[in-house]
Length: 40
Image 1 (cartoon, rainbow, N blue to C red):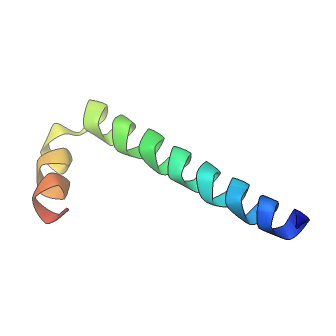
Image 2: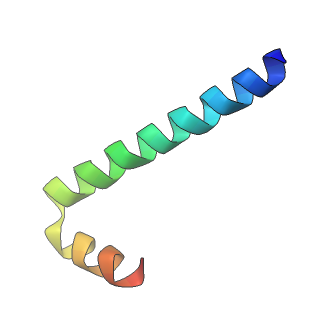
């Protein structure tokens, strides 16, 4: 039970940090954002 909870928290934390990375790259590198938006 505890392991499942920890796995869920890790996944959520990874998603949050990924969103933060995306926002930072959006703010600081608009050229890279256009390329990533085209690939995704």
